Length: 140
Image 1: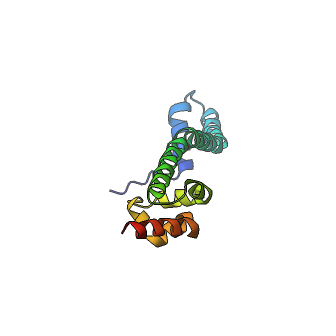
Image 2: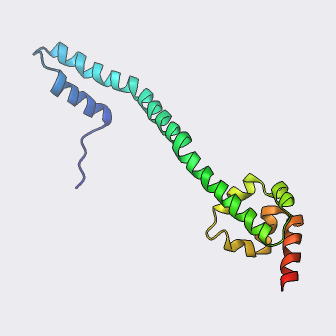
Image 3: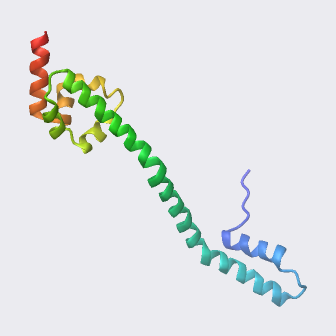
């Protein structure tokens, strides 16, 4: 069922008259009818800014550290895999950028994707890729 109770302004005016318009005089009811919506629309942007501020604080203090912990763990796994497969640790450290690892860790099954040379090239560059391919070729 479609129920239309009016616009926000009409609803606020109605509520103001019903709950705060007592006192018996029409003048008091009219003043309350306009004063309450005026106060609401005056403080409404501040209320929105307050909730945005609270959301940003939660995002920065809670969500971002959890995300970065995952990125750091992903970086350690990738570095460990590369070193186990023949890359030099110092070369990996130079070429494994945070931006690349963040992009790479968002994909599903990112450890399985290290087997793909194109993915590995985008992640660590040509020098590390050449070291890993040479080691894997030597093993096989």
